[in-house]
Image 1 (spheres, rainbow, N blue to C red):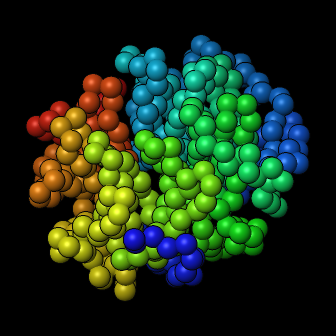
Image 2 (spheres, rainbow, N blue to C red; image 1 turned 45 degrees about the vertical axis):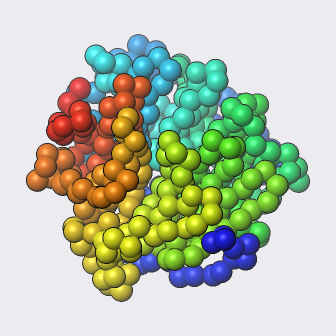
Length: 382
């Protein structure tokens, strides 16, 4: 087995581009009237965001003509609307005709949107990655944030209970869990000191800081961390995967393919696959690593070392987005690299999303969104 139940302390990689972006988040979120949740250390506002003169119902004040260039997340809701989360410009909603922008002025906790989800009632949830989650019911935003001194809940066993339709959001020292009734903040670290983000520059993240999360088909939870590799929670215990370079650089992406394989994207050590028995570093096996990045932080556009996102197309091909080398497609036998020379709008790819039609959307760090129709890339212009 490649898993290990012991936690090994490792040094985080310098010059982590995502870390620099994440740290743009303000250390506290603007909320309205707050009530303390003594069980989870969570702050729950009871007063929803008030509508401005031009309300978000009519969208008169928020209609946009173009999308911000730095896209962090993409999601298609149950009504067919597309949502585009950005690094500093909030989130956009596109219904096929009109583009609407929401920011902290409309009630978002923060303008950096790391992940987007929808609950069973059709409410939209926006995770800012570190210090807050905002819910949108179609008219108003409600924001939830963890306390600065939040500790493991007194009812942690119940709050870690995995349920069929619950939502999990990654956060600075742990995760947020929404079970359909309440939201709880749950640190992965054993102590508050291990899970804290420093309050003064350079705002160093805990090695347990969570960058991504996944619930697999069997109901297990997976978390990618800043420097502790990957953690699996099966509902009873935690198992840590740290081998073959997985621990050290941050794990930024987790994905389960149609065959049930787990894939881990590491910002420095590349692409890993776990089939339930063996952990394999594909980047090293294929000679696509970048040893210079580990030593000096230097990027190499011909490598598959710095991975930001992983997804799968309708034909079962794996797509791997990198921060400096465009995207790679893996058909099970070989890797093909696509860059701006092939029509990709940017070689820095933050996210890859497959919509209901099976079309792939690529959110970039420099030039908005582009789509792939199976043959070519085209820039998305609403």
